[in-house]
Structures are given as C-alpha cells and as structure tokens.
Length: 158
Image (cartoon, rainbow, N blue to C red; front, side, top):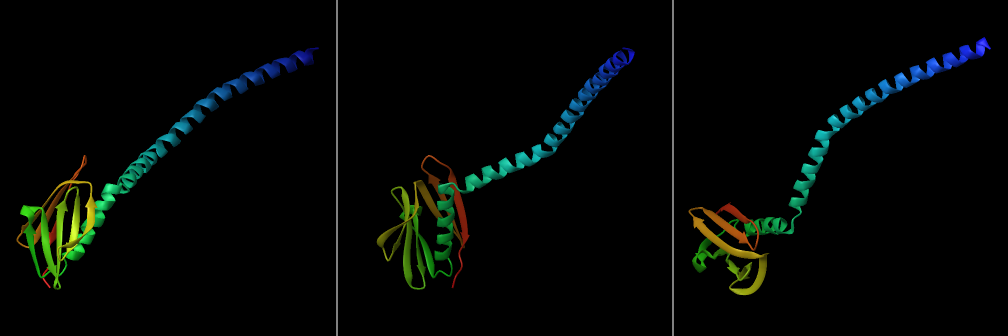
C-alpha cells in the first residue's frame, strides 16, 4: 500500500506544480498578447486615418471641384485675352480666336462658346466670384450647404 500512497502524493505534487506553472504561463501569455497589441495599435490607427483620407478624396463634390479646376486650366492656357463679366460672376476668355464665357448661372457654373449653348462645368454652387489680379485669376466658390473652395491660376499668353 505504501507505494500507492506514494504515487498519490507524487501525483498531487505534480498537479500542484502544473497549476503553479499554468498561472505563470497565463500571466506571461497575457503580457505577450499585450505587447503584440501595443505594437499593432499604431498600425491600426494609421490604417483608419488612411481610410478616412481616401473616403474624403472620393467625395463627389471634391472630385467635381478637381475636374472643374483641371478643365478650366485647359481654357486658361495660351489665351489671347481675358476679362471679367457679370460684375465678377464670370470670365470671358478668347483663346486661339474662340470666345468662351465661364460664368455662374443659377446654381451651376456654365461654359458657353460664342455666347451660345449651355454646358455645366460645376453644380451645387451657392455663390461664385472670379477676380483677375494682374496675371492671376482667382476663383472662390461656395457650395450649397458645404465648404468654400478657392483656386488661383497664372495666366499665360500665347
């Protein structure tokens, strides 16, 4: 019987050692998990800031504004003359013998060629001002219920 009691005691001691080791292992495991989390947390923050910037860049109004500014840049390249019209509500551009009016009309900015037609360039506009200052054209657009955008162009002669 003695050997059976000895085995029982040995088993109890081994279980006690296992329980002690499990406590230490769980604590160390938690510390390792915390360290990994602390290393990954800045990456998670960077990812979400990138996603926010990307989603803002895909805003339809932002994209429309960028397209408008690029299209206007084409009409302002190698111009023969430019003048303000409608008390700063638009500009008349003569480029290679062709006349373009780009002006605020109702809630859009439209383009007309030789004062005919009606091609919308920018929509959802509450107010718009065009100002020629020497060799620069400054545009300020306030969107309906939204932000105000500004653009500045350097005018280039032919």
